[in-house]
Image 1 (cartoon, protein in one colour):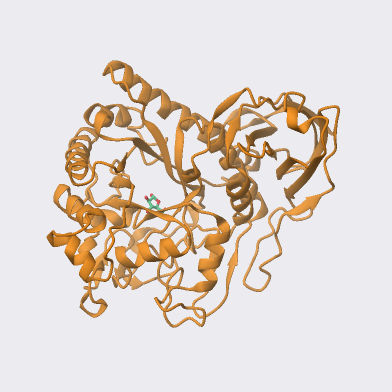
Image 2: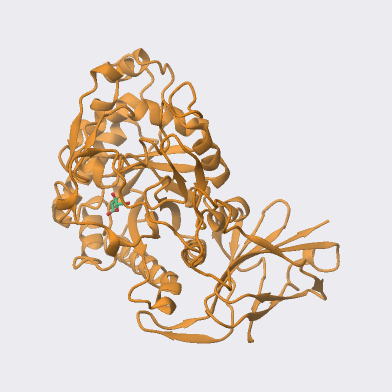
Length: 506
Ligand code: AHR
């Protein structure tokens, strides 16, 4: 058995968790919207045509913010197509996914659904085929109280109160050649700055996300951020990062260390933002919005030319395993470890499309293994992230070099003083004995401490999945209680496992 140790000290604070770190993403792509969240003929449909079974799973997942309506889709989207009487809404070609968009669901329906599932919308504007004018009209439609063309139209469509949408994305992945209207960093920076300025004139209270690179592997990564921010720095609040991971050629050790790559990506973007800050003598800091992240087996995705203008086709409906869930839990640990600068995160996506929730048309909805670490981290990872620096064994990986076998972070609940430790054992074969030094956590030393250790792993079959027929094949389990003795706790983390250890008093 390997051994590792860490110390939890409330004095070593990284930062407050912004609840929006636990966001997700709903794109008009495949069956995320149609037969995912929305299916009027389904037995569980509510009076608005949205599935109650899916909505309940979304509520339990705990996603305070939902990015919408894309993704690549937004770069060809006319938001006006999705408002007003449904029978008059146009059917359009969606160039991004070579599908037919019926426009049955638009901004009004989405905002209403968001509120019913306890989330806030994070809207993206189209900077691919449109620009300043469409963006400022959409914002006037959603956020202006009344007495103007667009705000009165919203009222006429049944929403007397403005939606007050706070968070807005200035386009999507504008550096990617696959993006409708892709462009250069300087051109995008100018357009984003002009759009940001007009949008702030409509509603100065909004927060704006500028497009960073669509991946750290892009040839323009780094210079894109620096050039784009030179144009936009004072007008935007966040830079976006997108990052997807998969196992390549059976190299599981590298896949299990994907969070090391996310750490480096985040730290590089922080460095670039701070370089532009220094060079431009700006006061404010730009924070990060990791608004697309997940495991995605992109190598299994058929090329676009093979898609054939279907309506709500089955696209990128990846089935996730225990291994994928451990990686998702580890990626969340990486986001938390950077909570001082990462303020928004969106697990891409929410339903059916590379998603923690699956649904069948006319049939059941169920959750994938990746749902569990996300839901538990979202529920218990609220408060202040504490800096823990584990010491322990390392392993060599082909893609990321030498990486620690143990990765961990701790979050202290500000009112109750409860501490939750999230930890991953990346070793595929050996359990890891972990000593936790809690002597600095006054509340947790001496008094009555309740310890709970929840784990997601499957020694016999790490590739186990959930299906419509066996929706609970993979669920987290409780290991025995955790005892704190003299301010120290000892635990064993199973091989290839995601762990949550909760320590509460009383
Ligand atoms: O999430 C799927 C796609 O991945 C999004 O549409 C796009 O932004 C990214 O490339």
